[in-house]
Image 1 (cartoon, one colour):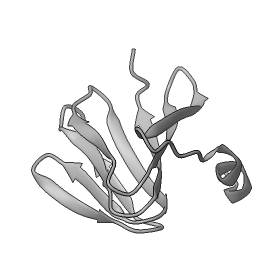
Image 2 (image 1 turned 135 degrees about the vertical axis):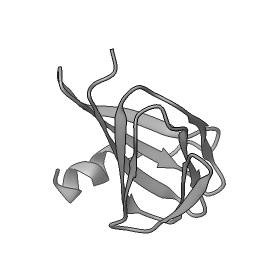
Image 3 (image 1 turned 120 degrees about the vertical axis):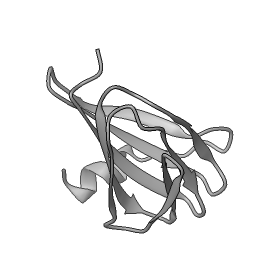
Length: 103
């Protein structure tokens, strides 16, 4: 995915995080998450594996009971059925690759 495309798609809302479905197939889904500083994607679990890629900003990925630092370029994997979420320390842009695609 080109940086220019992400720059065009990223969008922030002061009231809540923004999520945009940017790719969807029978095998996987890719979602762009944009969080303002202080916003959070509450931890939840899913039957799919999730790979977070931090595009810009700083924050934490909450994987199970662990808080994993997010900085640009960081990759964080979450196995199926493990609780996961995001917390933004600065404005944060994260791509989530979800496979297999949730039903």
